[in-house]
Image (cartoon, rainbow, N blue to C red):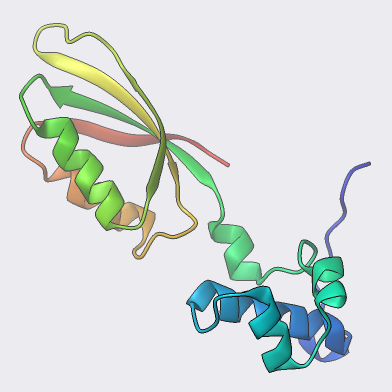
Length: 145
């Protein structure tokens, strides 16, 4: 069964749905450590939270929850890939896969899949920083979803 999504104004949502979102935000921010604490704080049952938790998301969260595939041409020098990985991690990206070719004529192609849901900066800003790393010849997004 294919899921359908609707854009709904907040003031017409049922209270349990809105409280579910509050619980998710409390957990994500680290204000509380457990679901039990969070539901107690917002005044809802755990069963109601579990009923709605996978069905309600902030719109900007859905837009950001994605995986990006980036292709790099890197000079075959020690530490270049390590610096790229450090910048990705420092920007909040989570590296999922790394595929690297054997360097030919001093250049290796590296394709990295990155989870971007927790980026602390814009993806384009992160790519600009990576482009400035000595030894990075090219960095471009080749897939997103």
